[in-house]
Image (cartoon, rainbow, N blue to C red):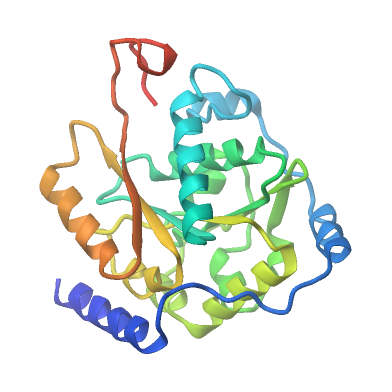
Length: 271
């Protein structure tokens, strides 16, 4: 607990010194250069059955995708209103479904042809995003964030406007990596190269480690995903307070919630 509090204090001091956490773009490419950078990314190969088994429902608009589509639209509206671009997804504890939520938001954004989105797996201790997407690899995200491997070597594209940055393996220096100045530079380079309208960043649970506390002040806002019937109000309050000390809280999502009243056009389903 003392280590977490110390990390919060350091991050707060950095935020107060540097001003608002609004990230700055690097030198912008012209539109042709950006289009070419996106086109050069390899297409991700997805197994639809595996996606459905892992509860990724937003490949197309349907009654099952509706809750995520509503969340996507409200997030886009908030981002446009507030000038947000970097959006983190976190949770009070593990097993809340934050990575599944991140993936569903990603494919929902991919269906909006006027929006380009880059989705990054910064849960360096688990690398769950690649797993639920059925991907395998050898390059850890830590190698990208420390500058040893260029982002384009791990990035994959789904359609013309959605890109994933996936890492594999387990990092033993995740907190130090996320809090480093090199990670800040890598994010700025990705933004300058691909100029996404939104970046979704899958982060570890708030209670798992101090990984997030030196990083959240570098993003614009965060969504907190809670687990219905498991996450307590105290855990939500603590997570919301911790996030709010470092960045904007875009909202709290109640996941794994059973509806029996026909909400969102279907009954007795999980999302």
